[in-house]
Length: 267
Length: 282
Image 1 (spheres, each protein chain N blue to C red):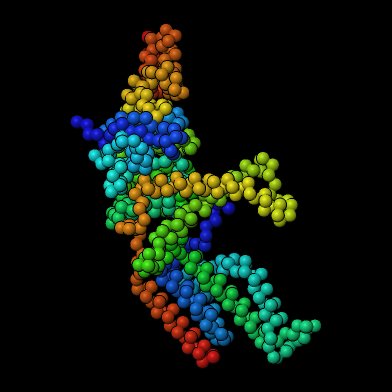
Image 2 (cartoon, rainbow over the protein chains, first blue to last red):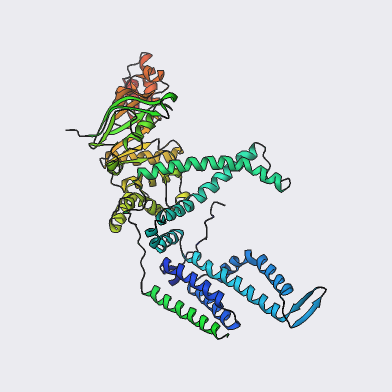
């Protein structure tokens, strides 16, 4: 459990990995817009092709893609059944008791499945190809115009970094506390839902107390290293964008335009 | 010529309200010179950590006393970062002082805060990691390192700030013997080879014996202040405040008391070995 990191990165040396993380975030947003604009077989196919090509360029094996999609299977199945049974279409194919399966329902269900699969696959590509530090730096950089509105952009990014830093530490701590409580006869596995939730209290309380203590010590340590919000702060690594980022931006914009135009003509 | 780096003048400190009466420091006068390697000893609650936190303005005296670091009063809020840049601090728990998710990013934290140029930060980070022998781990995640390695990263974080003085608050208290050895040899190297002023707060007598000067604290006051030999020769006084002397010192003192011609002010194993073999041969 100690290896858990949010949005595990898949380290590889690829052009996609090397893109400026700020551009990658923008591309992800563009992709989501593109996907939701798509309403026809052709435009959905464009999106699917984009995702497949992007995975190939990022050198991420198909096995990873399958692993990503596994948790969404229940949602997909639910959406599929819901759409097939309750979509009010006109071309009835089959009638079962009060349900009728229509051609339109089937179509809508298939579209829905494609959309869910593609959105999960496409957005996962961002975290597969970008480290958590790059992500927080990129978010800080992208949100920096909000500083003018007194929005604490730097503080937000700092909080994200610290949260990511402390996830493994707190997981380890949770395991220690659980072992300690088990050694004292605590039972986390039996009983109904309420009993189990109640059994978690003796874990949560020590965990919170220790987290607050840690926070206070960390604050002292940060102050000792001259931390004083983001004013005048420099970075070891500065984000740089290059030719590849501009090229990728042009491709993305072209694709988005294509999908929008195709949708306007109902293709 | 010795230049005073840290000067405490009549420093008292009280936690909480006056009526709680938790006086941690009582009228401390102390000077630490540039380049000195000082140990501060004391049992829990003797005020040693509280005193250390005064050296880099994390705490300031609650009376009219003052602490001067390189001539700057730590109560001067305008110049507090100058004080903290000069006096770096390493704490007891290695997990609670590492900020970033990659070793080199963490070492870069202080220079980033100080607004140092990226190319200069890169140079300092590489140099600091080299000095503590952690260069090969620079891309690692801190939570996967051992305790001793984490503490060395924390020391590198202070070095990257180019502090004149490093204050270490019980840096080895949570480490296994191997980690303790790594950290202590790093500290000794910094003090002896790089000429840094080092203040080591500890309750391990063997660590204190490595320093040039030992200050013993008890009940918020300075009880003893001198070279390790001077301090550890006052065995009875140390015992009365719940402290011991290094095992070799204890051994030689007992041998001396039992009539053998062994010097009682031995503080290192090598010295003890020499003395004992001299007596055995003689």
